[in-house]
Length: 255
Image 1 (spheres, rainbow, N blue to C red):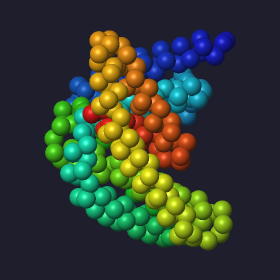
Image 2 (spheres, helix red, strand yellow):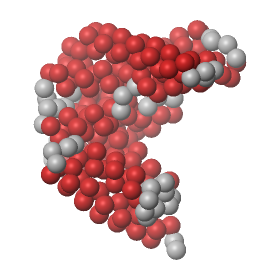
Image 3 (tube, one colour):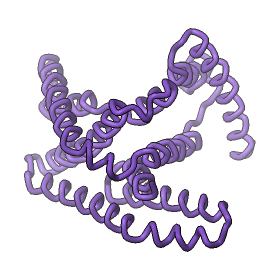
């Protein structure tokens, strides 16, 4: 069987089961994404039905979906709102990550794990899933609420903090010692990427969209916006950050 036809079959299984599980979740007044997760566990390669054996191609679809989701969030998140929640969001995110790091490390140490094993557990527990929380807020119709905007800002900052933590642990595992200079370099890269992206967007985007609007073709506008989203997501990934961060920034500068 060719890869293309196999993918068509996998998508068929996936969409049909997800539609059923999502409908059940909605009927029982639960987030539909919970139904989607259950559907994936049931038909995935480790589930009881094993309808889908290979997840490599489907993982590509999930990457695209996350980029589009965070791009859409960024579009509803203008730059002035990003400034407004900056300090408060940073403070809350840092406190939350530090508390969860402490709890996670204590659990790992209590289980007798090594320092780095306990730190990896702590890092995993300290970061929330931006995509899942955004989807739940979207279903609840609370994406525009001030509390939701603050929450999304905290999640984005958590993603950036996670990059710093993972970079520091990676350097520690490779070299056998903690290197503070590596942390500073990572923080500097994050600052340059975010600052440079926003600065370039503020300067260039109004002029570009002014030129595009003169064409009077919405197709060009959509293609350029999506190209910017995927381009920044890829650049963010290549720099060692989350692709979702680049997609979110693309939405912010276009908004």
